[in-house]
Amino acid sequence: MKILHTADWHLGKRLDRFSRLEEQVLVINEIIQIADEENVDLVLIAGDLFDNFNPGVEAVELFYKTLKRLSMNGKRPVIAISGNHDSPSLISAPDPLARECGIILIGHPNTEITSFGTEHFNITHSRKGFIELKIEGMDFPVRILHTPFANEIRLKEYFGENKEEEINKVLSQTWKDLADQFCDDSGVNLLTAHLYMNKRGAEILEEPEGEKPIKIGNADLIFSDSIPEQIQYTALGHLHGFQNIGTKEKPVVYSSSPLCYSFSEAGQTKYVSIIDAEPGKAVTYEKKSLKNGRTLVRKTFIAVEDTVLWLKENPNTFIELTLESETFLTADERRLIYQSHNGIVHLIPKVKNREFAEEQSHEINLNQNIELLFKDYFKSKNGGQEANEELMNLFNEILNA
Image (cartoon, rainbow, N blue to C red; front, side, top):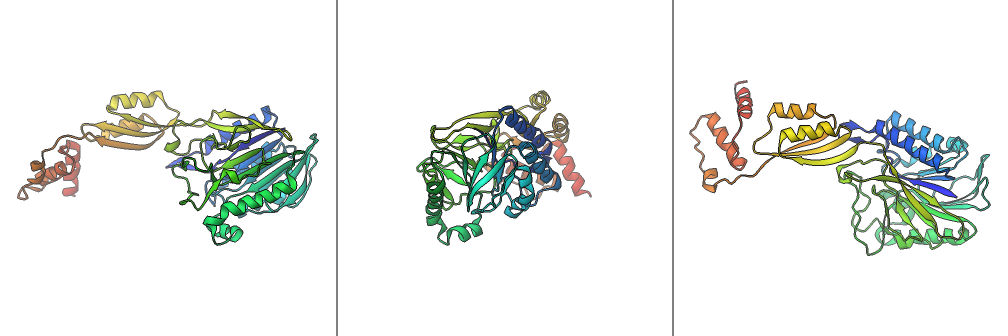
């Protein structure tokens, strides 16, 4: 069978003042196209479906329409779990209706899905944190251990007060008990979770810039050796870069977000994971790159002319722009830069350091007129940089208002 694994859609997310919804529509269409072209039998979406607990109407509508298309109107099962950006209740609420379209929405940890069947698949076993599917045309079952994100309150509810010591132990034991009971070599065995997971002893994986952090100290760090040996593939969400923290034989994969959502992700290629699986054998997987969406770029220039030229040559980008110069940017220079491109998220002017004699910075004549006093003050605070004519005109305008 073939499985598509994706995560961290963050529908409704903005980049500063810029909406990303149009890009999200395009990249979601691309994911649907990949699912259809690859003829996948199952779709797993590993959390952070929305960017916040109260997503806008357009984001919610995009989500529901996307799941319906991914499910091919009920022919292909789609399983989506909540992440740390999602409201579990919002995710779980439409589940009874979603089932009619072959969609299973799981908001809370330890959810037990009510058994049901469609024309194309049936849930043959269901426990807290586990389902087994029998899909039309397959002579083997698919077993899925599912663990949506749990916040501090829900972690205590599900895993007890001593969370820091108990979470790995409890998750490991819970997963093991389910795997021992249901996951033998006669079926395909999967785990999907939205957790901060890493290999024991490995270098700490950085959470995305602007992302709500899951890992605080080591209290919420789940080690990959907690995964039962029967699991053939683990589909993770939360970190936005594609990476396998497991082994080649038993991948434990963050599939990445579909778009670059912060400048810490600048230059990253985004992917979905396509898994080939069959009972009793090691899976193989391929990362399929996603092409849609604006590129995020961090650039530094020293000349306004070079800046404007590059901006005009690279229109389909979002930019964090640093401009190093001998003097502060004038209003006309700022206007020219912003008129050259509609995707400048941050413009960071940086005046080059100049040597400034220490004795100069200490000798300010307080008996000077206010204009000269301001010039000396400005110079003392900016490494010897003189206030330009435009700044002085603004100062005088304020002074005489």
